Image (cartoon, rainbow, N blue to C red; front, side, top):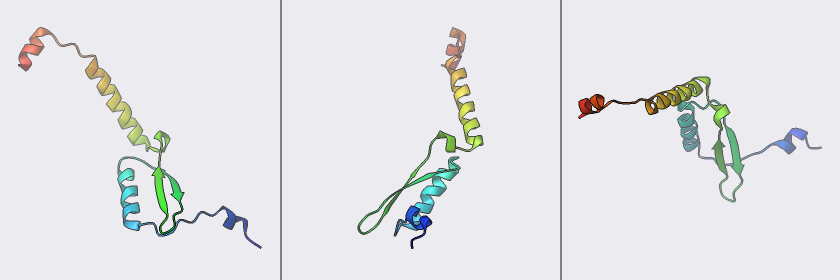
Length: 89
């Protein structure tokens, strides 16, 4: 008799560990706290994909993005006078 957990199990084989870990570290370092794993079985080697969305970002990263957006909006709203422009030249 087969266990129900075995029926729900997904096993991807022969995933290159170095590449996989580096990809996870890269997205973690950009502020991603969670990922979805997508797997496709292959004949010789399985393929694994990593996906994430905005809600998976760390709170600090979301706050940094909001701050960046606020700064960009402020920059767009700056009105320079002729004297300001002449000083730049």
